[in-house]
Image (cartoon, rainbow, N blue to C red; front, side):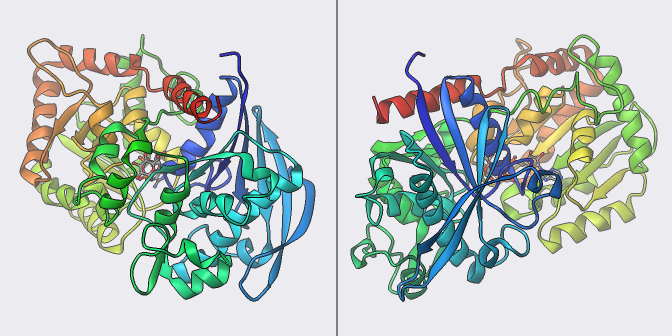
Amino acid sequence: MSTRRSVAFIGSECYPFVKTGGLGDVMYALPKALTKQNCDVKVILPRYKCIPWKYQEKMVYRGSFNMDLCADGRSFYVGIMEYVWDGVVYDFIDNEDFFGYGSPYTNLIDDIPRYCFFAKAALAALNYMNWIPDVIHCHDWQAALGPVFLRTLFAHTPIGNAKSILTIHNLRFQGIYNIETIKYWTNLPDYVFNKDALTQDWVNANLLKGGLNYCDMITTVSNTYAGEIQTPFYGEGLDAHLRFHARKLRGIVNGIDCDLWNSATDEKLAVPYDITDVLTKKRENKQAMQEQLGLVQDDHMFVVGLISRLTDQKGLDLVNAVISPMLDGHTQIVVLGTGDEKYENAFRHYEGSHKGMVCSNIMYDEGRAHRIYAGCDALLVPSLFEPCGLTQLIAMRYGTIPIVRETGGLKDTVEPYNQFNNTGNGFTFDRYESGLLLDAINRAKTLYFTNRWCWDEMVQRDMDKDVSWDSSAAQYRALYLELKP
Ligand code: ADP
Ligand code: GLC
C-alpha cells in the first residue's frame, strides 16, 4: 500500500457535471475510490456548456496556451479550469469552438474534431501544468487518441514518460471516420495510419482501434466481457484486433459509489431504510412511488422497474415481447429512460393501454431513478450485450432483485437464485429469447407470491453484497504498479 501512484483520467463525461450513462458514474466513483488507496488522481474533462452553473462558477482558472492541432497548422486556445472536490482534482479543458454548444455527443461530424482536440489538449495540459502522472488512464473512443499522441507527437515531451491504459466501456462506439478528416484534425504521422493501428479500411480510420494498439494495457469493465469481445458476435469488428492484443487485455468489474447510492441516507427517497428495516420501509417507498407515478396504489403488486438508455443494446425488443404476458393484474411496470424513438413510443403506448399498471417516464431524471430503485421489487436488465452494467448493482444495494441476461458484467455480478440451497442474488436467463426472459420473470413472481420468506432473505442478501469499488480500485492500483513498478 505504501507506494504512492499518480494517474490522470481522461474521458468525455463524469457525474455530477455531465452524465449520459455508466461511464459518467465510473469517472466519478473510481477516482474517488483510488484516492482512498494512496493514489493522486486528476480527472481531465471537456468544459461543456451544459455543465450546471453551480459547478462552472466554482472552477478556478489554472492557465491557458495555444496548441497546434491541424495538418494545415491551425492552432486552438486551450484553457484549464480547475475544481477540487473530495480529494480529486478535476481539470476542465476550456474551448468555445469545441465545447461551447450542445450536449456532449451530437454527431460524428462535430464529435470527431472535438475529441481529436480534447485528447491532445489533455496531454498538453498535463505538460503545461508540469504534472506528469505515472499513468494516463483513458476511457472509450473519445479519449482513445491519448495513447496514440503519447507515443508519437508527445513521445519526447515530459508526459511521454507516462504509461497508458485504455478502458473499453462499450465496444460498440469506436469513433470511425474518414482517414483524410482524421489526418487533418490530428496531424498524426502517416505511419500510424496502417492497418494494425488507426486504419479501419480503405477510406476510414478508427480512433479506438488506434488507441488499443498504442496503449500499454487494455482493460474492460468485466471479466466476461473481456472474453466476449474477442469473439465475432460481441467483437464489433475488432475481435481479431483484440485477440492479437489479448496479452495486454484484462477485465476489472465496475463497482458503484456506496455513499451516493446509500438507501439509509438517500434524501431523494420517501423513507430511508437499511438492511434491518427494508422489508417494511421498502413497502412505504413502493406506495409513495405508486402515488407519484399514478399507478394503482396497492402494495401487494409485484413492481418491476427498467432504468436504461432505450437502445437495442439493452434488450428492449425482448421486453416489448413480454410486456403483455407479464401484465396479469398483479404486476406493474415502471420504465425510466430516453433513447430510440421506437422504444420511447412503444413504452408510451403501453402506458396508455394499461393505465395504472404501466408507467413510462421518458426522461432523464436522477431523483426519479433513486425512487424507482427503492420502490420496485425487481429490476429488469435483459441486455443483448452489457460490458458491466451498473443498474443491477444499484438495484441490489437497494434491495431490489435483478432479473438479468447472463452476459458481460451481468453474468459476473448476479449469481442466479438456487431454490435448493437458497443462495443467489437474482434471476437469470442465458439465450437472447423472449420466452426465456418471461420464464425468468415468472420464476421471480412465483417466489415473490408463494415463498415470500425466501424472497425477503434474498432482498437482505443483496443489500449485504459488496458492490463497492474497494476491490476493483485495488486491482486498478495494482495495474498502475505493474506498469510503473
Ligand atoms: P450504460 O452506461 O450502458 O447506459 P449502465 O448500467 O452502466 O449502462 O449505467 C447507467 C447509469 O445511468 C445508471 O447510473 C443509471 O441509473 C443511469 N440512468 C440511465 N437512464 C437514466 C434515466 N433515464 N434517468 C436517470 N438515470 C438514468
Ligand atoms: C458502458 C456500458 C455499461 C457499463 C458502463 C460503465 O456504458 O454499456 O455496461 O456499465 O459503460 O463502465
